[in-house]
Amino acid sequence: MDYILSNRARLISIIMMVIGLVSIIVGYMTMEDGNRFWANMLINGLFFTFITLGALFFLALQYATEAAWSMMVRRIYESVLAFLPVGLLILGIVFLMGTLHQHHIYHWMDASATHEYVIESTIGSDHPEYVDEMVSGAVENPKYDYIIAGKTAYLNQPFFWIRTLVYFAVFFIFARFFRKQSLREDREGGTAIHIKNYKRGALFLVFFAVFSSTLAWDWIMSIDTHWFSTMFG
Image 1 (tube, rainbow, N blue to C red):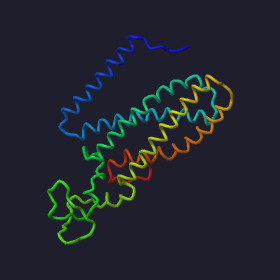
Image 2 (cartoon, one colour; image 1 turned 135 degrees about the vertical axis):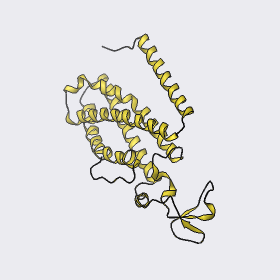
Image 3 (tube, rainbow, N blue to C red; image 1 turned 120 degrees about the horizontal axis):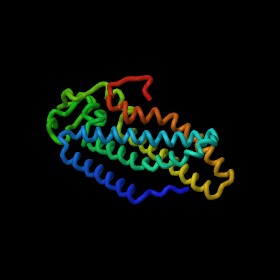
Image 4 (cartoon, rainbow, N blue to C red; image 1 turned 60 degrees about the vertical axis):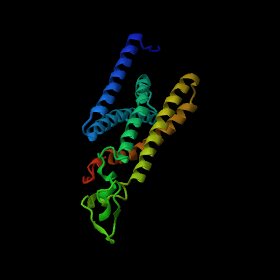
């Protein structure tokens, strides 16, 4: 039995989406502190994206364990995955705005915190010149943070973006694959698709075992760069 969204439900959904979009625009236009707006976007993006990742993990787990009972509810979890591209887009925008210094949620993205010295003549300019050694004309950088500087091998923008894009690609590809294979299995049947889903499900669990910790370090823990923990993730 196919579920068909009624015209009334469709209209209500569209109205709610428009209200939400307008609220976001108004919030952005009237914000006094950019960090608050982007922090709200980050919190909501993480919360709902993690729900979709939970659904993706559930699907992969069912395929890897060859569970039969989940066939009754599989479509529900597949429908949850529809939000994944939207969630990844929201997070990508928040991270990009941090890179462009439109907010300072991730303090380590500010290069001024990672260099011990600054050329005195450039202080107050739009582009101060920071250096790591005492050279002629350099003075101590008041914004220098030795803890952030000590973590630059991991917390630097190129490496952060590489990791983030890998997360995005893996999650999107596997979500698209599972959905496509599920519909194909309904049409064609047989065991070949089932075996392929079993292998891909097991492979995703390996990726997720690592990424579920590392993305938490990158996207959440790094907000407080001074935080040290051997258990978070």
